[in-house]
Length: 378
Ligand code: GCU
Image (tube, rainbow, N blue to C red; front, side, top):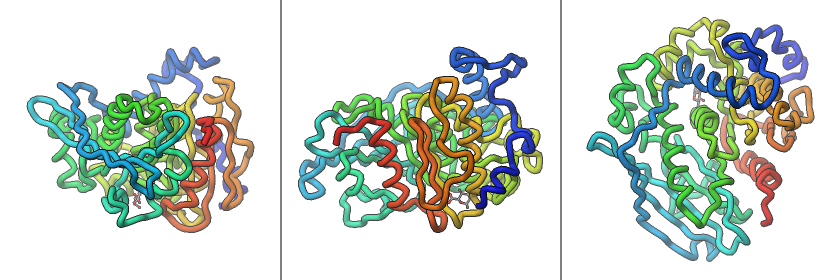
C-alpha cells in the first residue's frame, strides 16, 4: 500500500474516461455544466453499462409501523419496526426496517442506514445479539438514529433466487440486457427506506447516511450516486465495482466478479470482462456523482482483494467535480498512513489496520466525520 504505487498509477497512465467532458466532447467548466449536462450522462452510463436500470414505477407504497417501543437501550432510545410495502401489478414486496432513535436530542437526529447483506442477527432489534457490524448502542450514544434492512427482502444474494423478490414486480428488467440485478435491487431498497424516512418526523431526512460494507458498499455507492436525498454515502471496503478503479485490475477484476457473482450486475457489464479499458466509466465517476453531497470511502490494510490504493484513487480522481462546487479536496495527495482518517468538508478516507470487515473503528470514523458534516449539536 505504498505511496509509490499510488503515484505510479496516475490518471494518465490508467487512461481513465474524462469526468469533465460530455459525451459530445464539450468541456464541463462549472457546476451548472455538471448539473445540467454531465451528471445525468454519467448516471446513465453506469445504468447502461454496469448496474442496470433503476425502475421507478410503483402503484403504491405503504408503511406499517409494527412496533414502537420506548425506553430501550437503558432508557435512551425508541425502537421502531416498520414494514415498507411496495406494490406493483397486484404484487408487492416487504422491506422490514429496524430503526432506533435516540431520546432527548435537541432537534430531530441524523440517521445512519445500513444495507445489511450479512446475517440478520447483525441488526437484532432485541439487542440480545450485538455486533460491531451494526453497533447500534454506540451510534445511539453519539446522538444518531440508526437503521438497517436486510438485502434478502429485496433480492436474495443468490444467483438462482435473486429474482424472487423485487424483480417479480419488474419482470421486464430480467429480459433487458441493462436490467436491474441484485446490487441495483439493494440500492432500490435503500431508496424505499428513504421514502419512509421522509415521513417520520422523529428523524431528520435531510441528514441521512447510507452505509454498506463490501457488496453492500457497492450498493450504497450506486444508491447514493442516483438518489440525491442521501446527504452522505459511506463505502466500507467496497472494492471491485464499488470504490476501486476497475482499470487498475488489482485484486478482483471485472471478469472475476461477473463470473463468481453473475446475479450482481447487468448483462451488459459482462461484455466488459477482460475489457476494463473499454468501459465508458470508471469508479471515480461514481464517487463524483455524490457531489456536492458527502462521500466517505474506507479501506482495510490487509484487504488486497478490494484494492485499497484503487479505492483511495477513486476519491482523488473525483475531486475535480467537488472543486466545481467550491469544495476542497482531501488534504493529502497520497494514501494516508494506516489508521489515520483524512477528511475535507465533503470527502473522507481511511485505511483501517487489519482485514476485510466493518468494525467499530470504521463506524467511529464515520461518526467523527458526520459530527462535523451534519453540524451535530450532540
Ligand atoms: C467477495 C467478492 C467481493 C465482495 C466481497 C464481500 O470477496 O469477490 O466483490 O465485495 O465478497 O461482499 O464481502
